[in-house]
Image 1: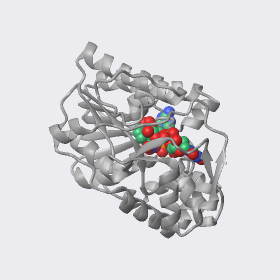
Image 2: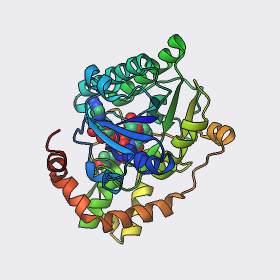
Image 3: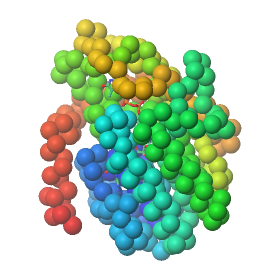
Length: 335
Ligand code: NAD
Ligand code: DAU
């Protein structure tokens, strides 16, 4: 049997694959990834030689490519592939609609055609829009996305639920809060701030910096995803959060303490357009039903993440310089 993973060369998808090849040693883990700017095969170096791992380069919007790559014995599709950065969606939403909405629809059609097993769709807490102070997002609340990114992820969720309702597909949606950890592309706040702090460079703080985000270590998230994949109830939505909402400024001050750098590096810049003030997911449903809870306290995870970036300067350098883009060519000769 096979597990067909999309977007497995990205930040969360690669953590999932590094975990899944070990948790599912008898299953072939296929990583279907277009290797956009966010896809980095260095993230998969630790498992590249595993016998039960295979990479297929392809775009989820390309029906023929997906049809050829998805095997007939597919036990599950785990769908991470997306355009994931909010700021990029503000500059141009087209790629977000293409990959996040159309790409999801292509995958759903082909998974149904191939009679694949469970379809696990990875969504985001951003679909609920901005929470009020002290408010927590539960699975039954309305979806009121604010950014083009969040709107495209909401549309994708609706397509998944429509396929489950109309065709009886075994689909599950998970919505995760802000992930952090090793191998995260340094356009997102935490890896950007860590690499800037390590170089003694200014850290851009959007607006007043009082926006709240709910941080979860990526390994806690992928542990939850593996549990949902095997034990989740079909048709359900599960929230996966770190139970750690923090204001950006407070989080960055903690980071500067950990890295031993001065707070004067924090530099207020123009705010993000339409910037959501607070995300915080209530994850009591997955705790109650599936016995999962986040295990890595934020400060401990942050220290480990800073240590990882310090110990993996070559990864940071290759990623920041764009050199990682050449790796696929050298490894696979463009195939
Ligand atoms: P990422 O940007 O690091 O990686 C995305 C991956 O998808 C890359 O490997 C890229 O090459 C691939 N991809 C992009 N377009 C593709 C296409 N058309 N066809 C095939 N592959 C394509 O993303 P991430 O941060 O790892 O997020 C993974 C998923 O989790 C996304 O669906 C995102 O919306 C969701 N999510 C992320 C977070 C977070 O904090 N990072 C939180 C909640 C939900
Ligand atoms: O909440 C889950 C979402 O988290 C995911 O769905 C997205 O894929 C992921 O990118 C992330 O979105 P955010 O917009 O919350 O993450 P980002 O790292 O871009 O920003 C975190 C916060 O920090 C946010 O309030 C904006 C702010 N910020 C961001 C950057 C890049 C800054 O203040 N300065 C920055 O330079």
